Amino acid sequence: MRAGAELILHLAAVLHAPASRPPPPTANAVDARPRRGRDGDSPDLLQSGEASLTPLERLQVKLVRATLRPGPLDQTIRVCQKTLGQWWIRAVTARLRHVYGIGRLPPWDPAGSMILVANHRSLFDLYVTTAELVSRGLPQRILFPVRSNFFYDHPLGPAVNGVASFFAMYPPIFRDRKRAALNLASLDELASLLRRGGFFVGIHPEGTRNKGDDPYRLLPAQSGVGRVIHKAQVPVIPVFVNGLGNQFARQLRAGLTGDGDRIHLVFGGPIGFGELLTAPGGPRTYKRIAERCVEAIGDLAQEEKAIRAAGIGASR
Image 1 (cartoon, one colour):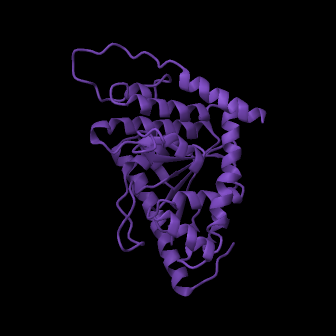
Image 2 (image 1 turned 180 degrees about the vertical axis):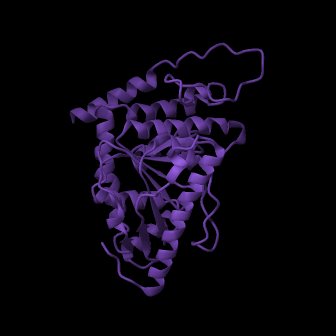
Image 3 (image 1 turned 120 degrees about the horizontal axis):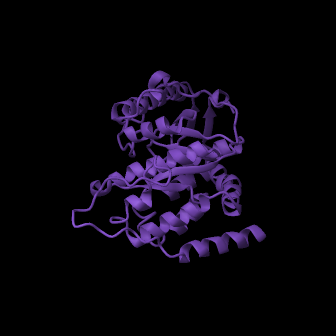
């Protein structure tokens, strides 16, 4: 009860805090380059977007950031993710879910961080995958980068984010090319949180949902995930997910009745990047790291294809 009251008071203080006053505009056109954060290393999303983020988007970012600061609010969110957040997801997929390769995962390190890279065919890929890992002892706070549309530009965004994922959907990724520079700030903030320790980030190297007919044909790798991995320098594990749909009601019904496609989760061991992690950062390095992630996921895809064809039972 005390933790819940502190959570409400803390959020109220954040929402009513006056916004920091931006520097006066210059006579020149708006500078789209990311503004550097306090540490001088990574651009800060709010500072970089002072001229392009709407007041609502700024407020939403401040809200989620408040839950990421060490303290009772962050601890409450972590507890909710590990209990309610994973329980109902596993309950509604239990009759269809089959898990492979779980023994390849490294031991959990509560003080460290980890990145999960997954293929992206369903809106629910990362929900089901992380719920499975939480049930097996995953100790870190969970985050998923998410498109800014609705979750950050709609008044209901924080409510859905809070109820559906306990504020796991952060940071926002902007599809509007005019605001593409803000994505560098979002990705670098994600890497900074990973370096801090105690975070688990799920991300899709394909960058967008694959709507093709063949679940085993992956989209080209996008360099954003490579940027995060290179800057964060934490273990990266791959997973291939197959069998999930995109319609919530239909997927829910199929999971409860067991009358639907088998949901396969195939995990791999930590990805080896060789000298890529020590190479100078840049687009080519980031792209190659992302391609290595897609290659690892592709290997698991072929493994899942053979499992599905053979009708092999799950190794739980």
